[in-house]
Image (cartoon, rainbow, N blue to C red; front, side, top):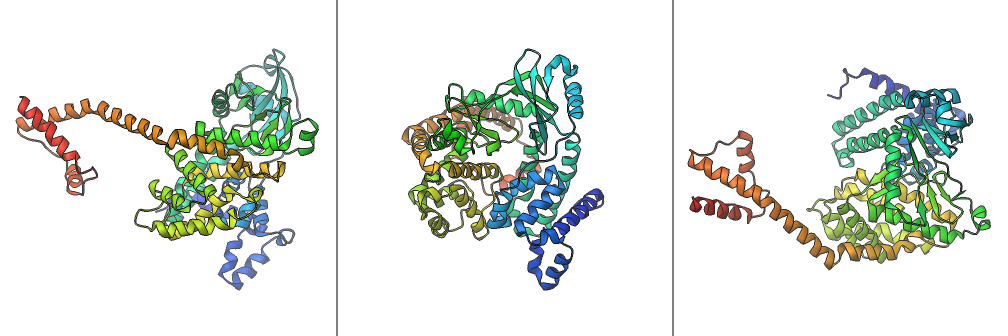
Length: 510
């Protein structure tokens, strides 16, 4: 049923993983099953981890298990509905750092990928990497043309390791859905698929280069945000070369102030940049931690590391904007209605009850001083009431929620006295006026009308074929078609009348 016999390696891998979890005391959810379980688990936990919080033990275990688990832990940090607030908070501190691999291996990968000797590509190449993460590491170099560049090289063997781990995750998600039908609302296989798609793209550095180039185009002419240029002639699947940047890490507050960059102004630029990514472009950098975001000499923000990016379609952007503004204005009824209109909550549920639930979540958070309000945490807590209202999880929003948490953390460290979402509020309201106001509705209706008109020739052609078939002895229907016709129609009630009118017109014309 679950590929149990066709994939025995999943069982072996699962047992190996559980052993690591046992050693680090990361199977703490089982402690709730009784004192016997609690004593058994504690006897198998290494004493050096026994005094840590559950979330800290989980972080240690994930780091020991390697790159895929580190990435998975970072994704779980956005799901307090699954792991709880405290554990999610600990997972948000999970750092993607691993010991570097030898420079000689990096050089060999570069030469293999670019099919040229290293000396022809770079006049100098630093053996000591400046950063080493789970997927890749970065070396500084000077190109053959004399440009200062940063060279990112994929970690050897990481693709095979990830494929093995993700096979286990997908298998376990299917098992859980089959054994626990109530868990289907969490859409675990889809969440695993979203995670897989994200990391697969991260392991092809050409995709990262393309993402950086696309975002650079989106921000053309923006003096507050820029992206280093890609050297496409020295970029391939396992190596990427880009312009080397100089700047101050966004979390170095004293250095920023000394350089004449007021932290409040930096937060304002960060808020505007994040808004433009999500709402204007629907394409955002999903890993904007302080190690990837710098302030340049001119005060503009500079982003690096585009391995993780996210996309939000136009309909979801409109839903998010209305929801965000509804929360900021305390209009919980509108927040609830937006969920129903988007189809995130089943229509048979009570709008009034969901409004009450939204208020119960928002009031404790929005009642705090403005600088302490966390919209990302508020949206995260919505998941905690999903079971009551059969609300499905939205895998496409997990990256966005994670990015909001990171952005809020940066803003709070830089300028604790301000709230970055209040700074972005005028942008949100302006965007909503342009995209949700009367003019936008007219534009959408006109677009829908033209789409309908474009489909009329096909409709008429199909109708003519139907007339011809009727004249030649009737129509033969496939069995599946008969089943569909016998069900309640999925079309509006006026559609059959329109079709009948077209058929009648064609019959009379002949």
